[in-house]
Length: 175
Image 1 (cartoon, rainbow, N blue to C red):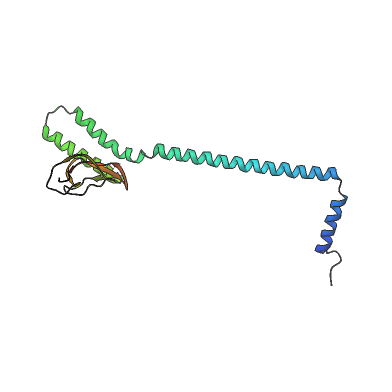
Image 2: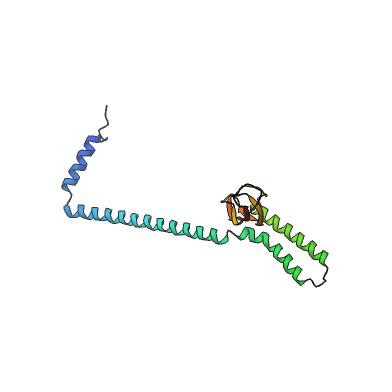
């Protein structure tokens, strides 16, 4: 048995349709204009939020790039300090100077290790790798063509990216 106070879905639809039919056109227009204003406000807020997120993301990327060198810079500060102290040394003791330079180089190597900077130091006879080596000149040699004869300057990688290719002299092809 149905409760008399309970409204069925069909009655609800009929009542809503009846209300819409009896509602004044000006009131309906005002209601729709209010809905439009509310939706427009929601749209503008969402657009502003999107712009703010885009701006913050751009600032974060810029800050990350700007301060990315901070980690390696901290590791290089002791190296700079040691070099400055070496320049102030007036003792003239070559052995002490050599030992100081060696210790400074070890500090630099440690800093490079922490920053994942790896040497590119090809072996003599190694095939030229154009991604990691830069051929500076060619020499006549008994080695195979386009193999390393001599390394003029080591190269460096950071992770898997070449910072500087190794500068090498390669064997000239035999005529």
